[in-house]
Amino acid sequence: MATTADAASGAAAGEPPHPGQRRPLWRRRGARWFAAAIVVVQLGLVANGYRDPHNYFAFQPFNESSTFAVELVRVLPDGEREAVPYGRWEGYDWDELIGWRALKGPWSQRHAFSGVDAVVDYLDHALDWMANNTPNDTKTLYLEATVTYHRNARGPYVTVIRSHERELGDL
Amino acid sequence: MTATAPAASTPDWRSRYQRFLDTVFDEPASLRAVAIVRIVLGPSVIWHLRPFLADALEGVTYLDVFQQKWWPWVPNAPVGLYVALLWVGVAAAVLMTVGLWSRTATWVTLAVVAYNFFLSETHFRHNRAFLIILLAGVALCDNGRVQSLDARRRRPPDDRALLWPVWLLRFEAAAIYFASGFSKLIDPDWVGGRVMHDRTLRYQGDVRDALGDTLADPILEVIAARAFQWVLSPVAVATELFIAFGIWFRRTRLAAVWVAVAFHVGIEVSAQVEVFSVIAIGALAIWAVPSTRDRTLVTPSSWVKWFDWMARFDITVVPGASWRMVDRDGTVLEGQQARQFVRTRLPATFLFSRFWRYP
Image (cartoon, rainbow over the protein chains, first blue to last red):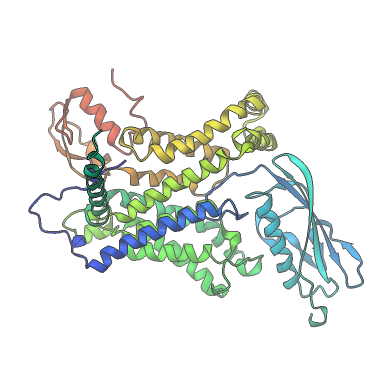
């Protein structure tokens, strides 16, 4: 390990103290507590990465080779299910609204950025966001995505996610 | 061992630990490594902000596309202010690199990059998180004391300052390699080669596009083989873990730096990781011993001064003299040995020094 001798440089005996060494005690102690807090938080985030699908600040890149594909439908108030081919409906375009490569063009099989669980979670939030930000669509009660995925070449598995129900009277 | 041994060793361990903490938190040391990281971070930040600026120039910002907020209390800047902030970030990154109002510029750069990052979870990437960590560590240091226009305008008495943020950066950098390596080590799909093999099969079309069939065929025949990935995957995991631990120890540090550079070049070639390779290689500077001019060198070559960015040597150029170097511990090296040693300690040449030997 880098030693005390590593870090000390040029501080010969008898030299006046460096400005950095003349800090008040609270600042010296504060630096230690701050550093200790950062270490604890970072270790906590690394541990949290085994629970959090996005593993934010847990540094687990290239964690999966999983793939996914989405079939999007809009469900109308009478229960009718209308397919949304290529993510286009009522003048809206999924790819344009998403604006994020990881979730663009999910109609054909694509790599799951940061893993399947992360993608499904992002899609879940994206459906809600779409439901809130498509005011010209006055027919859709909610959006539903059927996600077919392969986790590290195993599968296929299927999961279904939905946006929240929209208040059509307000639109 | 006698019964008194544990009692005798306890205070010794404690005092050594206390001395270590005192050194880390209270002893000033050379900031040159931090300055190098600061210089590398500027262009990296500009490269990082480039796609956001390009979108903004086309009239698209985060407000026009899917946004998933990290925290509801982070305010959304209106479009004009957001675009202005991005440009402020670019300007601050330039000032940070040239070292004009260095510390303020670094804090401003950090603020812009962090604000943009925390506007939406869709802005998250591991390399961006590391960029923020590095900016924060550099901002915490008095980073303009050396290799900066600030130092030229108002020359400080020396290049030293408190370096505890560098120790934090060392911890963070090692933690990243460890977290990445360990998560793969305990994942049977990863360490067993399944993940790498599947990715290779999926992206073999890209290899063909890049290299052409003639060159790609023999390469793919090797790397797309299940057995190859079965061997390569544990090697990749071991590489990350070796860097995470080996970089802490003097005996293995140079090897770990070497492996890290090769590792990052490999990743850069095979994947899209934005600024990760550049900042990770630049951040290796923080592992240099933060002392300067503690080796004396007599040399006939003036080029050494130009490449001694970390000020490893107290250099005297004497035309016609033979090379002579006195190390920290008093060891004297002469002639070719001295020249070879110097090459192993210069940032621009150390990577090649093992191969680059005079007969």
